[in-house]
Image (tube, rainbow, N blue to C red):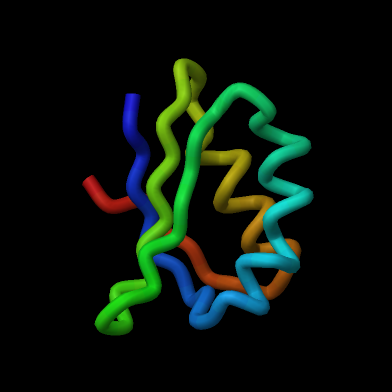
Length: 69
């Protein structure tokens, strides 16, 4: 499944800050942030539901995050 989130992550420095946490939580998932054109989109391909995990993780690091349907 592919999960798509709109976030307030805005730059590569913030992605580097989050990378170890995401990798640790989702060791078998592939993910990427699309920061072009101020879209601030996070895409995660995972076999398990990651919606609550990602919203909680990003909120814990003071980023807003909502799933896009």
